[in-house]
Amino acid sequence: MKTFCFILLLIFFSCGSSDESTYQENNDPVDDEVPTDDDPVVVNPLTDDQIMNLTQRETFKYFWDYAGTNSGAAKERYHPNNPSDSQNVITTGGSGFGLMAILVGIERNYISKTQGVQRLTQILNFFENADRFHGAWSHWIDDGTGATIPFSTQDNGGDIVETAFFAQGLICVKEYFKNGTTEEQALANQADALWKGVEWDWYTDNQNKLLWHWSPSGEFAINLELKGYNETLIAFILGAASPDYAISSDVYHQGWASSGSIVSSLSQYSIPLILDHAGSGTGPLFWAHYSYLGLNPSNLNDQYANYWNLNVNHTNINYQHCVSNPHNFADYGPDCWGLTASYSRNSDGSVGYSAHEPENDNGTISPTAAVSSIPYTPEKSLAAMHYFYNNDLMGPAGFYDAFSPQYNWVTERYLAIDQGPQIIMIENYRTGLLWNLFMQNEDVQNGLDTLGFTY
Image (cartoon, rainbow, N blue to C red; front, side, top):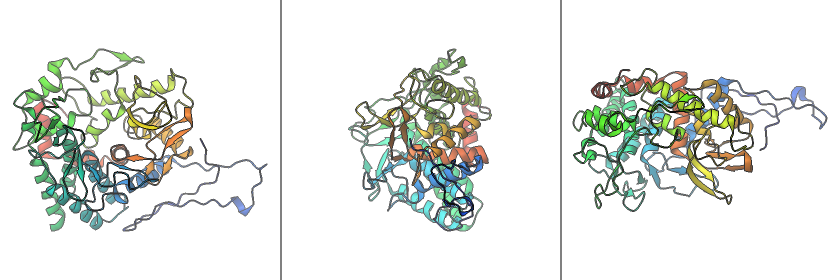
């Protein structure tokens, strides 16, 4: 892959209400001398703060510049070379990540608070009027009408996991604005009412388990149970936190935790797994991200796990796999690592999608895996960020979704659920913003208490 060979000067400034980039590139030669082919290449690398600033700022554009025209919410995907692709497809979970990203944008002065309130109100009004199924939203929603876009044949109704990701963002919005101006308090109250309208108990089907989908035509026919360990922990915590539609603690302990059999004694690379990762070895790294964008794992414990250790170990197993590089893929190592669900290079060179993990490694690296893991492995994640930037992977909305050094392949595409965790987890690493907002919510605390967590 092409590596930058120029002197880079970053000038960071507060943009206030401007939507322009916060950095500029200066390609002028040093001392106004014209370089020759014989001159050594001089590179002024970015500092760690600069690479984090740049990554957050550019990734923010996904949720601000490339959002749905009518809803203001996050599109499922954005392809810079084909922007009309799925342009009306709004993603519920990714929009929850977008709510949190907009709060980061306000704090980082990418936008003014007034702009943020206006956009957030637009998004919440859209979701308030969109199709709901016993309070839950569908995986995909039409940007123009608010109607459900079926994710699959039977998946044409409520998706409790996507809804949980959105609700996580709603709670952060509520907490951020609850003591603000009259307009801000109205936004906070709207966010609070929206998440509290989700009928979490309906999605148990009167059993001690949570079911992922409910369809107005097929009801619970998909019959996909939420069972750990994967990305769905947040749904149980919010279900237990609901004031009006709460699930019982048995749904968590018997369903999610399989009556204790979720605990694992296995290790990989001499690193304990701690929990059984849904029978799939260690699983893709997004399992260590999605539930923990608001839910702070730092001091999170229950009878099954210390969730900080769980996520640190998960990340380090993923890292060690890439360093060990059992398949001898080009460039894999301490600076080039990270396997998770993303776009993928198919064997014939076409673009597909795959949940990459050590047990499913085809040579595709997903930048979101390492970047979003920065709270767990800061030095390793920063090294990866520098590698991604120096290898020309930064596009118009942050790092491109996936690449393969083995095949000199980059997909110049983006997915909301991969971009969101990057800006959010970098902010949690730097200031704890979203963790602090979510964890101070009294309903969330009640839910954690009900399930037996300490935090």
